[in-house]
Structure formats: C-alpha cells, structure tokens
Length: 398
Ligand SMILES: Cc1ncc(COP(=O)(O)O)c(C=O)c1O
View 1 (cartoon, helix red, strand yellow):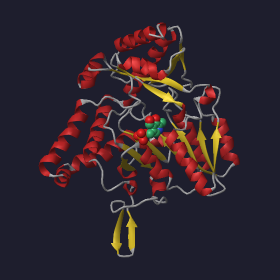
View 2: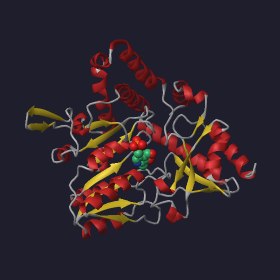
View 3: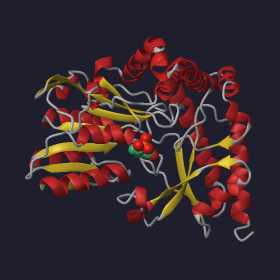
View 4: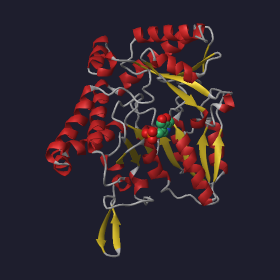
C-alpha cells in the first residue's frame, strides 16, 4: 500500500485519532463506511419499521453473500451468515457425521470453543480426538498428519489457520491437499486469518471455512460466516432447523433448503450484516494481498523493536508469521502490561492458557501479551509502542 493509501485508510477510521490500536486480533477499528452502513440501517428501522427497512435494503443484504463469496473464491450459495465464527463452526461441525470408531484430528493451535465442542461430540459419539503435534518450526507437522490419515479412520481434520495466541500461520493448503487425497473432511478456522491474509477455498482445499467480521475484516461485532463446499452441503443436514432453513410444506413434512443458508437463523441483526458487507468491500478495495504484505512487514518490525528491549521475550513460532505478535516482559503479568498500556490509550489483549491449552502451557506459558497490527498501523505508532514497553520493562514496580 502506498503512504497515500495508508493515510486515506486512517482518515476513514475515526478510532485512529483516539487510540493506538494494536488489538485488531480482538476487534479492529471499524472504518466510516462500515459505521455508516450499520447506523443508517438502524436509523431506517427506527423510522420505517424493521421488516420494511429490510425490504428496502434487500439488494444490499444480498450483496453481503456475494462479498463473502468474492473474498473466499466460492459461490454465494455456499455461504451462510451467522452471529459469530464459533456459531458458524458449530453449525457445521455438530452436523457432520462422526462414528464411534473414528478419530477427529486437531493441532496444537486448536481454539478453546472448537476444542470444547469436539470434546462434547466425542463424549456423545464415542469418537476420539487425536492431536497431530507440531514440527520443529512450531506449526502443524505435515508428515505426522499424513501418518495419522494413513493409519486411522478419520471423521474430520480441524485446523486453526492463525491461532488466537500467536503470530503463527499454519500451512493450511498443505493440510487441505492431504485431506483431499485421503477423502477426509477438512474444517478450517480462518477467524484470525480472514481480512489479514488472502484466502481462496480452492487453493486451501477446505470443505468448511469459518470466519468472523469484527477482527481483521474490520466489520461490526456479532457477525460471522460459514463456507461449506457444495458437494458437502448436499450431504449434511443441519443439527437445528427453523422456518428459514427449511419449509414446512405439510402438517407432517418439511424440506430443507439446498444452499448454505440451511445453517442460518431466520432472525438476525441486519444492520450488522450490512456492515459486514461494507467491511468486506472496504478490504477488497485495498486488496487483501496488499493488506497482508503491509501488516506482515509491520509485525516483523514490531518483533524487531521488542527484541531490543531488555526483559522482553517474543513467543511467535512458525515458518510464516503474520500480523499478530506475542511477547512477555520479565516479572510483569501480561494483564498488568495491558492495563498500563490502556492508561496511555494503547490497546493490546492478553492470550491465556484457557484459550490455548495445547499450545501455551506446553511452552511453559500461562499468558502472553498480544499486540496485533493492521494495514492502518504506522511505523510511528510502533515506535511509540516500543517506548511504552521499554518504560514498563524498566520500571516493573511503578
Ligand atoms: C482462532 C479463533 N477461532 C475462533 C474464534 C471465535 O470467534 P468468535 O468470537 O467470532 O466466535 C476466535 C476468537 O478470538 C479465534 O481467535
């Protein structure tokens, strides 16, 4: 991105004047077109009625499906809109067939909500979770995955593309390639990668992909989406249905709709959905490849700055690192660091073991500071951030 494009993107982001925001992995700062889409629809609902406003906005609401499809390289009929990435993931995974003798393969990057759902599903079905360990780089071991696929009856492979607790980018396309060769369903959690990395479901080889609106896509809270490959869609009956997902055609009969919206609710926050569409349009207008190049360069610069500060340890591992940076400062609890930064209008978050049981505790970590940049971050902001951390590290007790 050119300096002019970055300046324009910042000028379109009211939050840039208020905070030094390094919490895009938590929830980003919405740009003005997203705020306008959400607020104007809510105002219209207030003035004319919710159903009437929905009718007026029908074309824009339909566009959100097309926007997700453009972002992921899929058909709009393969997209369902949800209220979060977790609900999208649950809607798909709870509906997939899992037999008692089967294995569910996961990696060390597995996210808490996915892990909890899989534990429950395995308790119910008698299937077993099998952990595919990391390789020497700290990412999923592709050879170990190939072995597991060759030796077990596998119901599905669940991979988190970019974990919540580190800068790692897992080699998702290599996993997709192996799953396709083995004929095993591949579920990709792209919650932290969508909006910061280019994604194409054909290249990734995934059957299911889930994402959220509020993080690197810079959309509103309470938005998420599910992609399910058409061939799988036709075989998978949602675990829950309503009168949007299915038609009540006779007192004793119903038919399920054929597209991915079979996984949706009838009722939803339409203003937020319009905001999601605007956020995707905004990301596509900059180009996700350009966004990735800039944010990866900024994050590398942040890691380099932090590495020079006495007492700071970086925790990102992997061959490919992204916009998320994790670190700790000797003898200072990450939550205290977060609070001290917040007092300076600097936003970061804290990654904890309870969200990353298979990754942080085995590395001897209970929690880490997570600073996540985006294309609207500037070098000056990173200099200021590094100075804040240097001050905190040099005066731990103050
Ligand atoms: C890797 C990963 N997966 C899933 C989720 C859940 O997303 P949501 O809160 O939209 O359900 C998160 C949230 O932080 C995440 O980091």
